[in-house]
Amino acid sequence: MSAGIEIFDLPARHFRLFWGASGDLWQSLWDRFLDIVGDEPFRLWVFGTLVYTMILYWTIGSVYTLFDITNQPAFLRRYKVQPGTNEPVDSDRLKKVIRQVLFNQVCTGIPMLIGLFYLIGPQTQETIRQLPTFPTVVWQLAVCIVIEEFGFYYSHRLLHDGRIYKYIHKQHHEWTAPIAITAMYSHPIENLVSNLLPIGVGVWATGCHIAVAWLWFTLAISNTLHVHSGYHLPFLPSPEQHDFHHLKFTQCYGVLGVLDWLHGTNSLFMSSKQSERDYILTKFVPVREIHPDSDQVSVKKRE
Image (tube, rainbow, N blue to C red):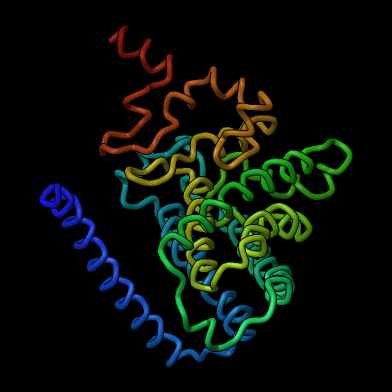
C-alpha cells in the first residue's frame, strides 16, 4: 500500500518542486521590475497601467494597421473576413480613429483607473511586491471573464436601443468592416460604460493584485483587437461573431456568445456561413477556403 502511495505522490512532489521554482522565478522577475519602475501603489496602478495598456494596444494594433495600409504581405488577404474591404484602409478615416482612441484612452482611462484604485482598497508597497498564488490567479481571471460577459453584453445591447443609438453607439458602427484599432473607436461615454467598466468591475470585485489585473487587461485588450481586426488568422481568437455584429448590427452582442445564445440574439448568425467559420483556426488554410460562400461553390462546379 505504501509503495502505491509513493508512486502517486512522486508526480505531486515533482509538480510542487516545479511550481515552487516557477513561483520563485516570477517573484524574482517581479521584484526586479519594481526595482526599476518603482512600487508606489498609486503611480503603479494609475500611470503604470495606463502606459502598459496603451503600449499593448498600439503595438498589436499597429501591426494590423500596417497590414491594412500596405496590403502586405499579400498572402494575408486570404484571411480577410470581408474580402475587398479596407484594401487599403482610407487614410483620413484612419487618422480620425487614432485621434479618438487616444482621447478615449487618456480622458476616460485615467479617471477609471483612479476610481478603481480607491475602490479596491488600501494597498501598500509590501502587498504590491508579493505576487499571488497560481490558484488565486486562476479563480480571479475566471471571475473577470464572467463579469465581462454580463457587463459587455447588457451595456452593449442597451447602446443599441433606438432612443440612444444615434447619439452614442453609432460612431463605433461607422465601420461595418472594422479594423483592429477601431476596438476603442467610440463615443467617450460608450468607452467608459461598455469598454472599460465591464473589464474593470471584475478587478474591483476580486480585489486582485495589480499583476493579475495587468494579465486580465492583456487578455481582454488583445482579444478585442483580434476580433475587430478583420482577419481570421491561425491560432488566434475567431473574429467571426463580432465582425458579423458590425455587418448586421442586431446580432452577437456578447464576447463569449453565451448570453447571445440564451437571449436568442445570434439566430441569424447561427444560420449564416460565418457561423461555420467561427472557431480557432489550427491550420494555415483560410476558413473562407475551408467553408466557401455558396456562390463560390457554384462557380467551381461550373468550371
